[in-house]
Image (cartoon, rainbow, N blue to C red):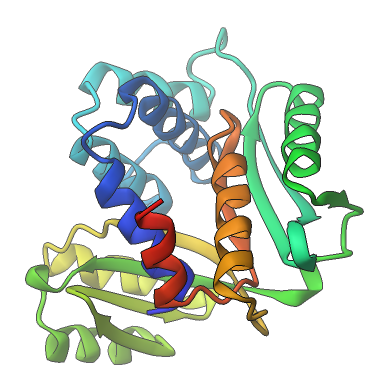
Length: 251
């Protein structure tokens, strides 16, 4: 498991108890809306939507909220707010490359918030294409090893066309080409495995290794960006060491 994935897992578990339910529901709603807009409102034929629904249910999101978000995305709700999905690029402190995926109903607000967050952290936003070439898009799934043992997960990954299956710290990660996303999702669903994370994500072609102190500084900057209302996902080429994770957890 990559250091940044490990840090994301730790944050998720650490923040589960005290996370603001409203903020969680806001992000889940936007994911449901975008998934329904992209592939239609039927979870049986729209794999991204099915995963979004499963995730919303795991967070105890009310059924009415889920259905309303799907209708908004599929166009059945004509009065809904119009969201758009935009990816921004930038640099965190020490030249760390950053990709930020957002879902917003007001791109001017989003750009303003992002620019402020980057600048305050000692970084800056970049022009489209300036950072993106340093990343590849992949299919990504993560779930507890208790949900499916490694041997079966490995067999599933091979059958689905995945590139890699790894187990570390009680979690299993399956990664593969974008084209394998649908098949991996289908086989996990058949195996009754509910991923904690699933989707298309960005992975750096090369990672930047910094000192523990500098790594902690960048992680805090990335957290600030992640906490913005319109931000769905943040990716970087920072290599996160166990020492940096221990340092920021103890801060």
